[in-house]
Length: 114
Length: 117
Image (cartoon, rainbow over all chains, first blue to last red; front, side, top):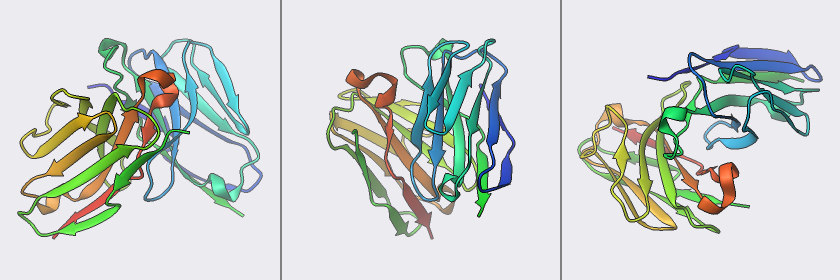
């Protein structure tokens, strides 16, 4: 079935550094979403991307919908300790359009060192 | 904003018993509810999709007789794990979609940690 691969799998960074992570798919997607999950909690939506090439920001977060529709990246600028968590991308498979189902990526674990 | 209340947050049950997990949308009508399970350090795997008043649609490999889903109203969906076994121990999360809120209408509950002993 469909799979979304995220890289890196995990990363340790110093507070204040910028972070970049990406999500790739073997097939095209209609929509890309980026979520953050804190330990023991449900994911929280950070950014939604609706069309190829779209670049969207939410505070220190910036995400782009790849032009090929097979990838997306998320950047976090000037990281702070509360950015720690697991970041998931999620995509909507166009073959399941109308069902509103999303496939989640493998996740990127971010740890910020103060 | 949209809030989904999920409970219990943690439950420990004996092998062979059943456990019910509830998800309620507090300030919006959840036309569709998704149920996910997540194993430690892994991604969220969709188990089933339910629309209010309809039977749930299960993903391939998910036993519908073991994971009973009820979406009887626009604000409540339940997942019952029947005859639970240790391998059912996992983190279960619901997500509710509101027809009126576009893509931002996917709101997740806070999850339920199920441990079967």
